[in-house]
Length: 341
Image (cartoon, rainbow, N blue to C red; front, side, top):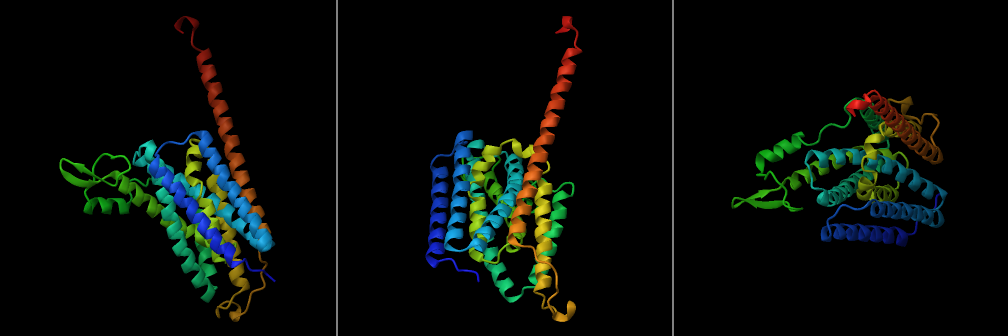
């Protein structure tokens, strides 16, 4: 029988997590800057260790099921958040956001992501409680999303999306940034800065990613508390990870395949679970279908393996290409006659 996490632990965890996010946001507003590699790595390490301590507390105060569900959910959301980061990079580059204010844009984008995901979690939990067959839809959606991941042109240019064009039609915008301000004055006229367009683009992206991430984690656990905390821990430190990885994101060419594999795997798991709990009259006469169910431990193992294989394969290919490029440069230099050097 599954144990229940203490209420004080759930409430206390939410208070502490919200407090950390507020402190993090306040630090950015007070001192906008580009963090050093050391600063970024320390923050990322802090949030990862914090997530592991939280998982340990769930093992102790709950049981093995709570702990493994959180770990699998956190790793799934973390991998999807890294994919989110790819699009953030495109948005910030497209709008030419000043480096000193990229932290503020990322943090606001993360807060928006938490708000959207919180809403989706509440709605999703309510639907699942009343209509378990929603897992058929969730599963099909994740499999379709996995295909979109590996299809050419999966990450398009976000700088001139439909919603941005509509906003530009109804609001006046200046051509230049004014620090991290949303409004500025140009020739005596009050106008919005491009920073508002950046936030709108980030918010729209967050909304789309919530449509993928929430069904994915509901395929691992149906506990709203675990779903939300896994999302919070996955998004915490994402801002620092952006600066830590830097150009490495472009080298992780196969990461999208690892993420697609995870989404497709969870999609299949959701459909199998829906068949196992089936109550739809047009499927097997409304009776449960005897299909194998995928355990949380299996899910955890698959998620870790998919991300590890994709990351290692990406780095191996990047190193081979860098080595081949270096050899071509060396050969090219060797062919130049000595008297022309």
